[in-house]
Image 1 (cartoon, one colour):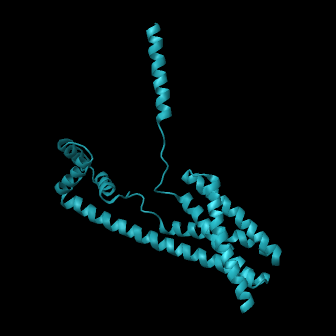
Image 2 (cartoon, rainbow, N blue to C red; image 1 turned 180 degrees about the vertical axis):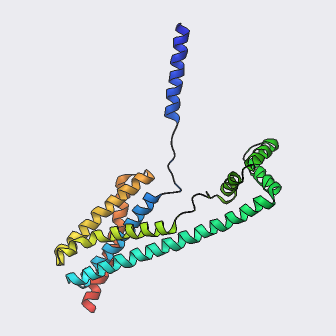
Length: 249
């Protein structure tokens, strides 16, 4: 009986230790949330720099609002167009390669089995096991296409991406970030609006840095400071140039 209790306790401890040893990996290939955060960051930094630069040269409230809205729309449209073209080109390239692979699987199944078996041998399987596994994969055409796409092309046929959705999310994310430093100018002007815009920009940039730190599991403080530093450099440069242009023009 004592032996049974000890054995049960040992098994329980082993399971407990196993649960603590198991760890989960983050998804580092997708990242819609990360893309959204980066879009907000781009919109925030670019538009706060633009707004402060224009405000330094021309402190009229209407001029700053027009410049800020123009920067928001132009930047968001540019981001959306770039994301759409990039995603569309990538999707078309993947679809083309999948079509080539699909034809090869239909017309040259023996060659594809040898090719897949060679990949498995490189991963440590002996020739017989590698051939058996490759042959088993080839029994189902859809499974064969998915496995060959993953092993040879490094892509998932079911995840080629949606260019329209990517473009819309990029537009919305950039626009949201760009709107933040513009908000004070709808209610104030002059020095008060400049200071409020700068403060909003600093707080929002630090928040973006903190969120990015959560994704990368880095120091929240250091990442936030890094984000704020780069934003401050950009804003200082545009404000100085705007001040100079305001005195010259």
